Length: 244
Image: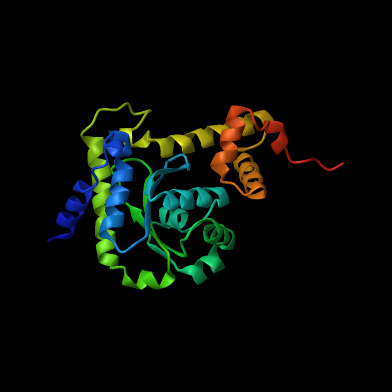
Protein backbone atom coordinates (compact mmCIF):
# COMPACT_ATOMS: atom_id res chain seq x y z
CA UNK A 1 0.00 0.00 0.00
CA UNK A 2 1.23 3.51 -0.77
CA UNK A 3 2.10 6.01 1.95
CA UNK A 4 -1.01 7.99 1.04
CA UNK A 5 -3.15 4.87 1.27
CA UNK A 6 -1.70 3.91 4.63
CA UNK A 7 -2.23 7.42 5.95
CA UNK A 8 -5.85 7.44 4.76
CA UNK A 9 -6.39 4.12 6.55
CA UNK A 10 -4.78 5.47 9.73
CA UNK A 11 -6.97 8.56 9.59
CA UNK A 12 -10.10 6.49 9.00
CA UNK A 13 -9.21 4.42 12.07
CA UNK A 14 -9.55 7.51 14.29
CA UNK A 15 -13.21 6.93 15.12
CA UNK A 16 -13.52 8.64 18.49
CA UNK A 17 -16.87 10.47 18.20
CA UNK A 18 -15.58 13.27 20.43
CA UNK A 19 -13.09 14.17 17.68
CA UNK A 20 -15.59 14.29 14.84
CA UNK A 21 -16.06 18.07 14.90
CA UNK A 22 -14.31 20.06 12.12
CA UNK A 23 -12.30 22.11 14.60
CA UNK A 24 -10.66 18.91 15.92
CA UNK A 25 -9.25 17.83 12.55
CA UNK A 26 -5.65 18.56 13.71
CA UNK A 27 -6.07 16.17 16.65
CA UNK A 28 -7.35 13.44 14.33
CA UNK A 29 -4.40 14.04 12.01
CA UNK A 30 -1.96 13.86 14.93
CA UNK A 31 -3.44 10.56 16.08
CA UNK A 32 -3.17 9.16 12.56
CA UNK A 33 0.50 10.15 12.46
CA UNK A 34 1.20 8.42 15.78
CA UNK A 35 -0.43 5.21 14.57
CA UNK A 36 1.45 5.24 11.26
CA UNK A 37 4.95 6.46 12.13
CA UNK A 38 7.44 4.94 14.63
CA UNK A 39 7.02 7.86 17.04
CA UNK A 40 5.64 8.33 20.55
CA UNK A 41 3.87 11.64 20.05
CA UNK A 42 2.96 14.22 17.41
CA UNK A 43 2.10 17.91 17.60
CA UNK A 44 0.96 20.30 14.88
CA UNK A 45 1.42 24.06 15.07
CA UNK A 46 1.07 27.20 12.98
CA UNK A 47 3.25 30.31 12.92
CA UNK A 48 0.87 33.07 11.85
CA UNK A 49 1.89 36.09 9.80
CA UNK A 50 1.79 38.22 12.96
CA UNK A 51 4.53 36.03 14.46
CA UNK A 52 2.23 34.35 16.97
CA UNK A 53 2.76 30.61 17.29
CA UNK A 54 -0.48 28.67 17.67
CA UNK A 55 -0.66 24.92 18.42
CA UNK A 56 -3.34 23.17 16.39
CA UNK A 57 -3.54 19.73 17.97
CA UNK A 58 -1.47 16.90 19.38
CA UNK A 59 -1.54 13.27 20.45
CA UNK A 60 -1.17 12.06 23.14
CA UNK A 61 -1.57 14.71 25.86
CA UNK A 62 2.17 14.60 26.67
CA UNK A 63 2.83 15.97 23.17
CA UNK A 64 0.48 18.88 23.83
CA UNK A 65 2.37 19.57 27.07
CA UNK A 66 5.69 19.48 25.21
CA UNK A 67 4.45 22.24 22.91
CA UNK A 68 3.30 24.32 25.89
CA UNK A 69 6.78 23.99 27.37
CA UNK A 70 8.29 25.18 24.11
CA UNK A 71 5.99 28.21 24.18
CA UNK A 72 6.96 28.84 27.80
CA UNK A 73 10.64 28.95 26.90
CA UNK A 74 10.09 30.74 23.58
CA UNK A 75 12.39 28.56 21.52
CA UNK A 76 12.94 24.96 20.51
CA UNK A 77 13.04 22.53 17.57
CA UNK A 78 9.55 23.29 16.24
CA UNK A 79 10.08 27.05 16.31
CA UNK A 80 13.35 26.53 14.44
CA UNK A 81 11.70 24.36 11.78
CA UNK A 82 8.97 26.95 11.28
CA UNK A 83 11.41 29.81 10.90
CA UNK A 84 14.15 28.15 8.82
CA UNK A 85 11.74 25.96 6.80
CA UNK A 86 14.10 22.97 7.10
CA UNK A 87 13.78 19.73 9.09
CA UNK A 88 15.31 19.87 12.56
CA UNK A 89 16.62 16.70 14.20
CA UNK A 90 17.24 17.04 17.93
CA UNK A 91 18.31 14.03 19.95
CA UNK A 92 18.89 14.45 23.67
CA UNK A 93 22.48 15.73 23.45
CA UNK A 94 21.59 18.18 20.68
CA UNK A 95 18.64 19.60 22.61
CA UNK A 96 20.76 20.04 25.73
CA UNK A 97 23.31 21.94 23.66
CA UNK A 98 20.98 24.15 21.61
CA UNK A 99 17.98 24.60 23.91
CA UNK A 100 19.14 23.70 27.44
CA UNK A 101 16.20 25.30 29.29
CA UNK A 102 13.61 23.67 27.03
CA UNK A 103 15.44 20.33 27.22
CA UNK A 104 15.45 20.50 31.01
CA UNK A 105 11.71 21.17 31.15
CA UNK A 106 10.97 18.51 28.54
CA UNK A 107 12.94 15.91 30.47
CA UNK A 108 11.32 16.86 33.77
CA UNK A 109 7.71 17.11 32.62
CA UNK A 110 7.40 14.58 29.78
CA UNK A 111 8.79 11.16 28.82
CA UNK A 112 10.29 12.54 25.59
CA UNK A 113 14.03 12.68 24.94
CA UNK A 114 14.21 13.57 21.24
CA UNK A 115 12.29 15.65 18.72
CA UNK A 116 12.17 15.77 14.93
CA UNK A 117 10.46 18.92 13.64
CA UNK A 118 9.38 19.13 10.02
CA UNK A 119 8.04 22.24 8.24
CA UNK A 120 4.57 21.92 6.69
CA UNK A 121 3.25 23.60 3.59
CA UNK A 122 -0.23 25.08 3.90
CA UNK A 123 -2.31 26.88 1.33
CA UNK A 124 -2.76 29.72 3.84
CA UNK A 125 -0.78 32.63 5.18
CA UNK A 126 1.82 31.72 7.74
CA UNK A 127 3.99 28.64 8.13
CA UNK A 128 3.42 25.41 10.01
CA UNK A 129 5.36 22.50 11.45
CA UNK A 130 4.88 19.00 12.76
CA UNK A 131 6.77 17.82 15.85
CA UNK A 132 7.58 14.12 16.16
CA UNK A 133 8.43 13.10 19.74
CA UNK A 134 10.49 10.11 20.85
CA UNK A 135 10.94 8.56 24.28
CA UNK A 136 14.45 7.40 23.32
CA UNK A 137 17.01 9.26 21.21
CA UNK A 138 18.06 5.96 19.63
CA UNK A 139 14.58 5.59 18.09
CA UNK A 140 15.15 8.58 15.80
CA UNK A 141 17.40 6.38 13.65
CA UNK A 142 14.42 4.13 12.88
CA UNK A 143 12.47 7.02 11.37
CA UNK A 144 12.15 6.87 7.58
CA UNK A 145 12.69 10.55 6.80
CA UNK A 146 11.15 10.25 3.33
CA UNK A 147 8.02 8.66 4.80
CA UNK A 148 7.83 11.26 7.58
CA UNK A 149 8.15 14.11 5.07
CA UNK A 150 5.47 12.52 2.90
CA UNK A 151 3.15 12.17 5.88
CA UNK A 152 3.82 15.82 6.72
CA UNK A 153 2.78 16.78 3.19
CA UNK A 154 -0.41 14.73 3.57
CA UNK A 155 -1.18 16.48 6.86
CA UNK A 156 -0.63 19.86 5.24
CA UNK A 157 -2.85 18.88 2.32
CA UNK A 158 -5.61 17.71 4.66
CA UNK A 159 -5.60 21.03 6.52
CA UNK A 160 -5.46 23.02 3.27
CA UNK A 161 -8.28 20.98 1.72
CA UNK A 162 -10.43 21.42 4.82
CA UNK A 163 -9.95 25.17 4.55
CA UNK A 164 -10.53 25.22 0.80
CA UNK A 165 -13.77 23.21 0.88
CA UNK A 166 -15.43 25.06 3.74
CA UNK A 167 -16.85 28.53 4.25
CA UNK A 168 -15.19 30.89 6.70
CA UNK A 169 -14.58 34.59 7.18
CA UNK A 170 -11.09 35.83 6.40
CA UNK A 171 -10.73 37.45 9.82
CA UNK A 172 -11.76 34.22 11.57
CA UNK A 173 -9.93 31.55 9.63
CA UNK A 174 -10.90 27.90 9.02
CA UNK A 175 -12.66 25.76 11.63
CA UNK A 176 -9.49 23.91 12.62
CA UNK A 177 -8.10 27.16 14.03
CA UNK A 178 -10.86 27.16 16.65
CA UNK A 179 -10.43 23.95 18.60
CA UNK A 180 -9.69 24.06 22.35
CA UNK A 181 -5.91 24.01 21.88
CA UNK A 182 -5.56 26.93 19.44
CA UNK A 183 -8.22 28.89 21.35
CA UNK A 184 -6.19 28.55 24.54
CA UNK A 185 -3.10 29.96 22.81
CA UNK A 186 -5.06 32.75 21.12
CA UNK A 187 -6.31 33.71 24.58
CA UNK A 188 -2.72 33.63 25.85
CA UNK A 189 -1.65 36.08 23.16
CA UNK A 190 -4.60 38.28 24.16
CA UNK A 191 -3.24 38.24 27.72
CA UNK A 192 0.12 39.37 26.35
CA UNK A 193 -1.61 42.31 24.67
CA UNK A 194 -3.31 43.15 27.97
CA UNK A 195 0.00 43.07 29.85
CA UNK A 196 1.60 45.32 27.24
CA UNK A 197 -1.27 47.82 27.41
CA UNK A 198 -1.53 47.98 31.20
CA UNK A 199 2.20 48.19 31.84
CA UNK A 200 2.99 50.40 28.86
CA UNK A 201 5.60 48.02 27.46
CA UNK A 202 6.20 46.49 24.07
CA UNK A 203 4.82 43.04 23.16
CA UNK A 204 8.26 41.41 23.37
CA UNK A 205 8.67 42.67 26.94
CA UNK A 206 5.12 41.60 27.82
CA UNK A 207 5.63 38.03 26.64
CA UNK A 208 9.02 37.92 28.38
CA UNK A 209 7.35 38.92 31.66
CA UNK A 210 4.73 36.23 31.17
CA UNK A 211 7.34 33.57 30.45
CA UNK A 212 9.53 34.65 33.35
CA UNK A 213 6.63 34.28 35.80
CA UNK A 214 5.78 30.87 34.33
CA UNK A 215 9.37 29.69 34.71
CA UNK A 216 9.58 30.89 38.31
CA UNK A 217 6.31 29.15 39.19
CA UNK A 218 7.21 26.01 37.25
CA UNK A 219 4.03 26.07 35.17
CA UNK A 220 3.32 26.54 31.45
CA UNK A 221 3.02 30.13 30.24
CA UNK A 222 -0.52 29.35 29.05
CA UNK A 223 -1.52 28.81 32.69
CA UNK A 224 -0.08 32.16 33.76
CA UNK A 225 -1.91 33.81 30.86
CA UNK A 226 -5.17 32.22 32.05
CA UNK A 227 -4.55 33.63 35.52
CA UNK A 228 -4.02 37.08 34.02
CA UNK A 229 -7.25 36.87 32.03
CA UNK A 230 -9.27 35.71 35.04
CA UNK A 231 -7.84 38.37 37.35
CA UNK A 232 -6.27 35.81 39.70
CA UNK A 233 -2.92 37.33 38.77
CA UNK A 234 -2.93 41.13 38.66
CA UNK A 235 -0.94 42.49 35.74
CA UNK A 236 0.83 44.83 38.15
CA UNK A 237 2.43 41.77 39.80
CA UNK A 238 4.35 41.16 36.57
CA UNK A 239 5.90 44.62 36.55
CA UNK A 240 9.68 44.62 36.61
CA UNK A 241 10.80 46.59 39.67
CA UNK A 242 12.50 49.86 38.75
CA UNK A 243 15.87 50.69 40.22
CA UNK A 244 15.97 53.41 42.83
